[in-house]
Length: 309
Image 1: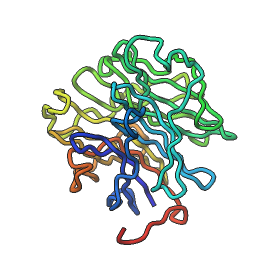
Image 2: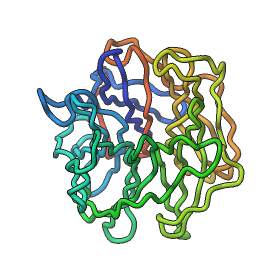
Image 3: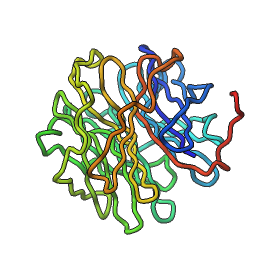
Image 4: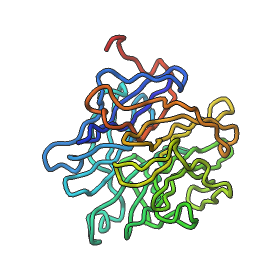
């Protein structure tokens, strides 16, 4: 069974919903979406919750997500669930260097796009986006509980190619049996967005593929009115199943973003499915667009819901 946690936008607010699939290709939305709402008045996630990352560990679902307050500052939140549907928030995560997180630098806080995996004996790794001087870069942090993190605030992935010269966003990392980290990430060149790949032996020092960008344009490639940018593809969520890589990603086309699927034998050369596998609506909460896919594969015994919910 596959679960997709994703962001839906009504045109006014972004919330997190759930879709369910038996094969990763044909999806249906959980009827009682959204499953994670924004916080209360003047809270740190009052205006937006998005970019979910979910793990199932010790008979519990763990979610890290991006929240935005009324001032436009973004932080990374943490929530847990017994069933993957009803969630309990635990506030936003803390980093060891509190001076920067508490805003000693001028401007808005920007901690975004978390991706978490676990290696070894309960060692959590998080890769996330942090923006300095208007340029997004990818950083790394470690934790033993998923809530308190240590980082040195040095980017582990920088903008050093033409196709990604403006910013790097949305890291997605797999850790293989040989101890190699594989990252798919989004690069921006000011107007167009694409997906690239890098690999690492320690999760900190990365070697980018010479084939980048692997995916770099959306079908139609028209000017969106959302950001007034001509855009492409972004925000990959990748799984390796039976010697095949599956990528669910965000497609930018027209007014509404959609979620599409691509497959690969090596993680480098991808074949896109033509039709989106998740689109906006019909309910109000995600009627404007769907975005930020994160897919996990789970034993059906660990997830259940009543038919007709």
